[in-house]
Length: 432
Image (cartoon, rainbow, N blue to C red; front, side, top):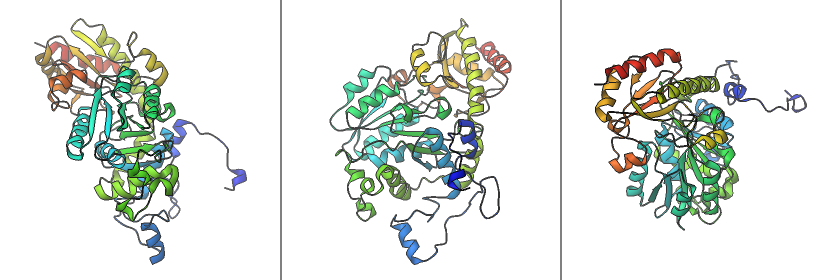
C-alpha cells in the first residue's frame, strides 16, 4: 500500500491485540505468525555479518538475542503498553533481574515497595548481597515514605501496579515524580493489571516489566517475561555511566549516545540478554501471541467475576477481611478510579477467622479452584501464601506484604461466577 493510501488511524486496543507485530508471512502467505524454531541465521556476506555484530545494522544473528517470533511478541506488547520497544525473556523474574542488571552498578540504591511478590523481594535481597546493592523497602501506600527513602545514590524506584498479594494500588504518577526529582527512573511491574486495565507509562513510569506467564498468556501453558521501555528517561543525566559511558563489554560502545531513546533497550538486549542468556523460546512467544489476541475480552470477564466474588466474601461473618481494591469503601478507591477504571484486577486475598488451620481446611474443601502457585489462568486458582509463594519471608515481611496466617489468595478465572461461589461454599463447609 502506498503512503498516500495508508490509513491515518489510531487503531483500538482489541485491533492492536490481534494485529500488532504480526504480518502475513512474505514467503508462504501464512496469516498466523510462524514459529521460527531455529538457533541461528545465515548471513548474506562477511560484511553484513560484521555490521550485525557491531550493531551498525539490525538483523537476526542468534536466537538467544533475537528471533522473529519473539520479536512479534515484543512488538505487540510494546504497542499495547505504549512503549518504544520491548525485550522478551524466559520468565518474569528473568526479565526483572535483567532490567535491574542493565541499569544498576555496585553501590547503587533501590527504593522498592514492601508489598511486592515474594519472589521479587527475594530476588532483590539476593541481588543486594551478590552485587553490593542497597535496597530499602517502604510501605507503598504513603508517597512520603518513598520520598524519605531516597538518597543521593538512589538509582531506581520499583513498585507494582496492583500489589501481590495485598492488592495495594500504586500512585504511579506521584511516585514517578518523586523518582524523576531524584534523577532516577520508576520501574513498575504491570503483571496483574495488564495494559488493558492500566498503562503505567502513560502516568510517568519509565520501565514496565511483565510476567507473561500470567494474564498475557492466560492459559497456564508457558513461562515468559518482558521489559518495556517508555524511551523518555535521560540516561545521560550524569547518574548512569553504566549506560551512558563507553561499555568495555561492547568494544567501547556508548549505548545512549549511539542509540538515543533506544539506548537502554539496546544495552538490555545486546549485553544483558546476550551475556545472561535468559531468552524466551519461539514456541512460548507464539503461545503468548495467541493469548494476547483475547486479552481485553478475558480481562473484562476476569474482573467481573472477581468483583462478584469479592462482594460475596465481604458479606460473610467467617471472613475477617477481603483485600480487593475494587470493593466499595476500599481505601484505594480514588487510585482505582484514576489508574484502573476498567477494574481492579482478578487476584486478591481474603482472611479467614481461624488462622492457618482454617486456611488449610478451606483449600481441602474446594473442587473447581486449582490449588497451585500461579495466577492469571483461565482457570480459577487458590493458594495459601504464607506456606507457599511467600514461605521464604519472615513474619515481619509477611505482615508488611499484608499476609496473615489465614490469608487465602484467589486468582479468579473465566468460569461461571455462580459455580465459583458454590465451590467456595464447599471450602467454608470444610473448615473445622
